[in-house]
Image 1 (cartoon, rainbow, N blue to C red):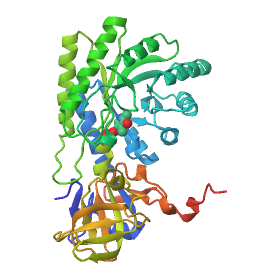
Image 2 (cartoon, helix red, strand yellow):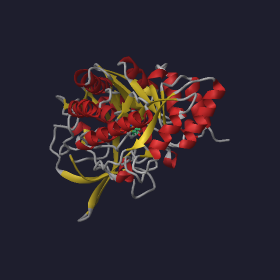
Image 3 (cartoon, rainbow, N blue to C red):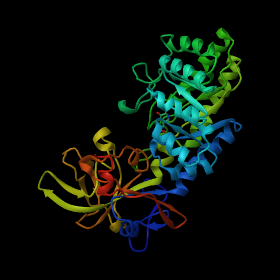
Image 4 (spheres, rainbow, N blue to C red):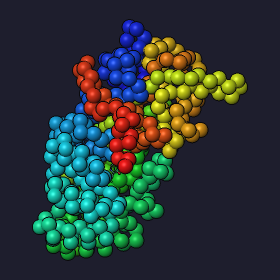
Length: 432
Ligand SMILES: *Cc1c(COP(=O)(O)O)cnc(C)c1O
């Protein structure tokens, strides 16, 4: 009935998440509120790592892309599942360290890592540094020598694959700020230089072709291109690249009409391509890494708001204003992303109108969505926006100096605060 399988309606006609009444959550913790279902996060992680066991003989690793949703609690959950983590900044690394995450299972990404970040990664024994460009390789080599470290690196490669997704989240093509291009020979020259490095050790190649991708074909194509490159490195340089990291980008269901391929199916088909291609090329099967972010976190989260004003503009549209908006969910203003919404206290009723859900910021573009089918919403109702677990909290801001909502985790019928609600005092914390 709803986009995520952990949602339902109880005998009061209220929306439930993981069996818990969302109207009660709103009353207990206030709104706006992010709610994350721990069991769903675990289930999504397991779908990936169990498929790795099944289809790739367990020679694969799942690294949750923490930029989708990062706080100490999710790091602890990922660690307890035995999976790894991707981090893209000192803040994400620091969060993982603070949660006692096993840092050898962390991959550190970014197209412009600072010296401070690289030093922090080396000090804390990060498992892989995914190097994006030559200046970074040289800085890292010098830093590693100075610090007496021998970091393992992967190279970020642009495989030149069209992933059929929104251009703001498309990353594998030649006109991209990320990584080394294959077509121009840039990547090969960089590999030669890395192979000659004394301190850094090149152990893998990485690509990430985009996000919210529904088809499996682009992933298969990317794996093929990357394996060709691994074979070229072996044949021409006599160097064996042991790891192949295929990034994330697996699509999820935001609307009922969305039909992403099941996660298991990605791994089944991509593993088959890797096995076949390695045999053809006469290279050893690499260790495989994947970095799902959205597909782990998005379906596990919802956002709860309280409805304020209702404005009917005859012949034009009806605005339903909520007590959040672009500061807690900037995805509509950034990408016109679509969501399913439900009036949580009327979840058993038909959706009888189409409305525009507006936030409370001083921007006309501050919307959660337009033309959204919804039950008749009035002031004081609780509105739930679904599948907001990824790229909502992690992209949230304090625009208009609005304090950020709390994050509550639910698990087996219990709820707990994982990130406290910000207060006005937090807003001025760093003001002098
Ligand atoms: C964003 C990103 C991911 C995760 O992408 P999703 O679409 O959230 O799965 C994985 N790897 C890298 C390098 C990324 O930049």
